Image (cartoon, rainbow, N blue to C red; front, side, top):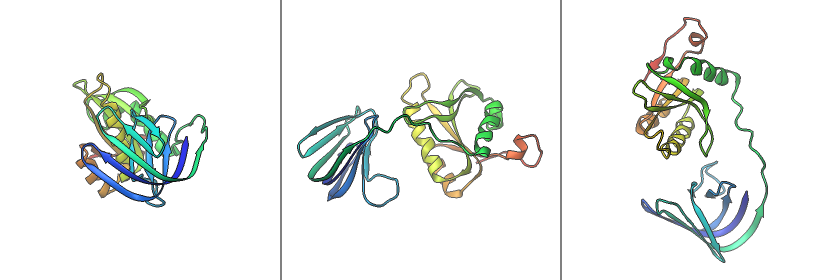
Length: 219
């Protein structure tokens, strides 16, 4: 990973135009080639970024990042305060808590509990930004990506939306629809999921374990 702290301006050109005036920011270049620009705030979310696949070309005072869609991110550097590179090593991946991991196991064994006709293709199906919990096929043969959480919040919906974007690049799967599954899904997450074309399903953990204490609810 390369980390650069610099005073810079940032210009994006693509689906729209966006400009960040001169300020001191963190520029992050990951091993996969993705580039993101961060301020000293806004938690983890970058001010602007370019996901892979993309191409970074640097010259003194200017970085230009382009992708196959023709989008361009131009970083004009006025002053560099720090420029370091560090090898991060292999990422072991997120370790789910006991309930979440067991939910995944239960639903992998019974994907029809999420939606009628679903058949499991694979657990932890890989994408270039991480694995989606379950990849299934529906009764018509369509691909369905399922992300499972103990509590359903906005960041989980955004995570599934990113996986769907990457999976849709695979012609063997496209189009891929998404289902967000949790024991309880917050109203804000349901609204965002609806806007992204993602279905939400609440599941009863005890029922899935064989105790008749509830039922699945489809939103």
